[in-house]
Each structure stands twice: as structure tokens, then as C-alpha cells.
Length: 252
Image (cartoon, helix red, strand yellow):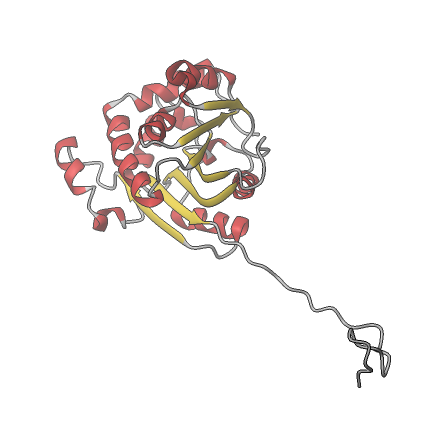
């Protein structure tokens, strides 16, 4: 089941999100998310591991039909207080989604896989309920930003003590195990943490920088594809010679 956020963990997570570095990463990753999923007004979206509702608010502003799910009752209650009736919110596990097959056009797992014991099971469930696109957003274990936060967590209380991060190649490997060779498009955000916020905003939004696989945030969009398999059945009974045709005349 993984890490279920209680109030203590939620406050640590929010403290990082509300820090200058966390807010910049959120703005840059939001640009990347929108570019990769290209959402259309009215699309049904499921945010798996929705937390306190940051991305639910984004999807509402984009005009999507929004549903959020989280294993933490505290997080869901907080999200509900922020969104009211703008989103359908449920408590549940990413590995056992309480939804029908192909119920959503789009599903997202943004900073969710890091806290699960079985990310592969969560991906397979997301594939079951999603018709078009699944977006994965994770922290990159090979990035300067992640390594710096992980080192800081050795000396102070931080959400980064609880995180299991990924590389781009690990993430692609999970996707291949879950869905096979589906089309994928990816990018990264916050590649140059040594730049000040003023310069980072313009430089990091370029497609060239986002194609560098060592940004703090990795985003990967998977296009769901479905194939039909036909099975050839062997004829087990020989046709009778001279059997009458539909018109009643003998067939030879």
C-alpha cells in the first residue's frame, strides 16, 4: 500500500511545496504537464494520489471533468475543503481503483509512485480505467535538485526521507512492463537548480532544456493503445458432399 499521509507527513509535504524551490518546481512542472497531455475541455480526468488538490485545481481551471483519489483521509478532506463541489473525491488505493474500465479519458499520477510499495500494480490499474493518456510525474533520482534535498533530509525533518525516486530509464521500464510498447513522450523540469528563479523561468521552459533527462521533475505521457487478436479455429467436421444450398439446389 505504501506511505499513507497523516497530518505530520502532509505538513512536511506542504512545507516543501510552499518553499521558494517547491513553488518554482510546481510552476515549471505544470507547464510540462500541460504540454505533454494537451488536455481538452470536458475530458474526464482522474488524479491518482491527488493529495491536497493542487493539480485538481489546475485541471478545473482547464475545464476538465475532475475526479481525485487518495489513500489519506486527511488529504482528501483538505482537498474537499479547497475544491468544494468542483471535483469528485474518493478515498482509495492506487493499486485497487474503485472505477470501471475505460471510465476516464486521462489519468495522472503526479508525485505518487514515489510513495507506493507496488508502483507496477498502480500503473496497471491506471491503464485499466484510462481510455487515452496516462501521465506520470516523478522526482528524478539523478537530478541535482533531488540529491540536494535528500542530503538536507539527513540533518532536518523532511518529506524527502520518505521518498523513493526514479530515473527516466526506470520509469520507462515500468511503463513497458505495465502496457507494452506504447507510444511515450517525456520531458523534465528544473534542470538547472543553481540558476536564480528569475533566469530559471525563461531558460527552463525551452524544449531543449526540457529534453535533458536530469531535471528534478520527470514527466512521461503514455498513449494507451489497444490491439485485437484473432484466433484461427480449425474446422473439425467435414462438409457433406452435395449438401443442399440455401436455394435448395445441390452444391458441389
